[in-house]
Length: 320
Length: 204
Image (cartoon, rainbow over all chains, first blue to last red; front, side):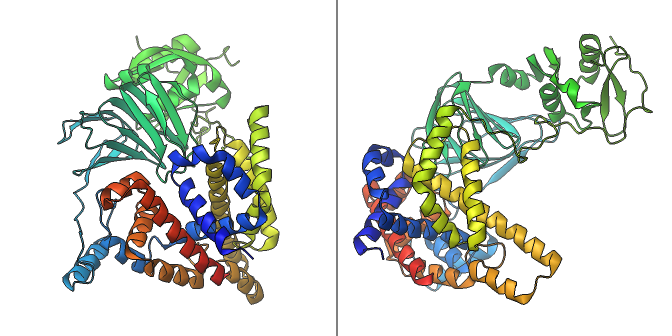
């Protein structure tokens, strides 16, 4: 049905589309090429092969092949059995080729309400915000950080030979020397750049990388869709670095979500409707009394402290 | 200054409304589509260009009746997604990836539904034709075929494929590790895909 030529060109187009830089230049010829039923069918086969091969990730046969593949940025977590398998294959001389043991991964984390500053061996600094978890792997070619939970501000020492990559969900933020913040949010991740420039791209190169300069930020969803550029959350980030929450005319429910990141005992609303009221002010993280007092005086919300949570309810006469 | 705390435990429900930025209507509910007209037009054009192809693709993953439904759902996902890449080939791969994930979810739902209902054996077989065990789209036969096809790739080609597919490395990164040019990496990737897709057409 599909000619060998169609199959070949389909595979070439597919391979090109996996590399974001070059495909953009060929948009017109791509549109012409794909406008053909036979070509489409050949391309579908490529897509199917690609998607289904992804399911072999955990197959022992593939793991063995992977273990023998050269690596600069070694696999994220190598199961012990896989290392053993690779070692034994090496020992019997089947794959005696450039097998490099992965540099160690170091994990740093904080509990709720806790913050932590970590100095890395390359001279960079990681400031961990509340309830966060990063894994650090420094190799000769790349400095790889995975943000598994929460938020961190990175102050990156300049080293062009070793890019500094922060992996969060499907996206990767890459810097050489700069200061930027990455936060896992509900359904995605948010990046703010304070100094220098970073690039934000998809882990599997599906999305074109975006350059983000100082003062700007960008977000991406869990599925990898990237937002427009927007202003960096400078106030909020400088705030948390100095144990303060800065609320600049934002909705109460957003403010409470931020407050609750730092508190084991969350503050909740008796009625979701009051969440749309706006709040202003600077509060010390952990100073619940001052925060509740401000809510009382500014928004006429009364707090009832329970064992598991504190409930806010409008004072009589201020229900609307 | 200490805030006044009034005790109102009688009027506060013990399971107070849990705080949630998005509000009580969770994101996956049928939320309105943020359709700026030009965005909608772009997505619709993109979608129409690839619709037939997508439908045929999905029919290889799920039973035909369900494929039509998933085509529709893929379109909505694309619309909801906001700023999509404006490069057709990349947008297409996003679309097909979304559709593949939907097919996987669909199968997962099916599997739990089936477990609950004890559907008779005939239905079981129909589903097995399309989908494999362990919440995977590729059936056992397809997996074996693909595994063999990967193992049979010439060494450098196989390495390029493995690094890109399973270690998520980009072409420039692979080029650096293997001391090849970026062009060669792309060519080897094309060769790998061609061979694997040939294996797929044997399988289906």
